[in-house]
Length: 72
Image (tube, rainbow, N blue to C red; front, side):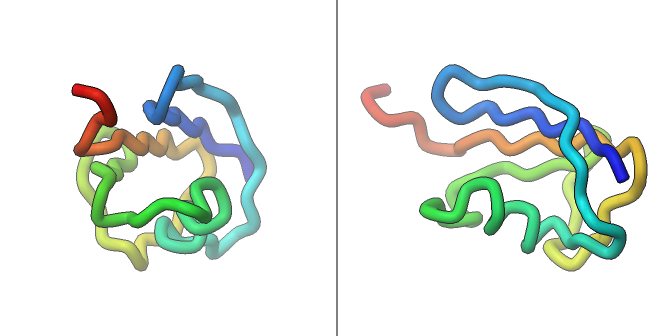
């Protein structure tokens, strides 16, 4: 299934990505930002905060924004 991933880390970008059914927010984060700590990010789905075990749905919009910006 396809979701929109908005990565606000660094330069930031938005792109449609394919994920398997049943993929949770936690596993998606680990896959995309494997060297990062989830506690350092504001993670939202469809502009709302969600639990880490939320299963992504077709057409969801996932935003990952760091809460601490290096050099700021």
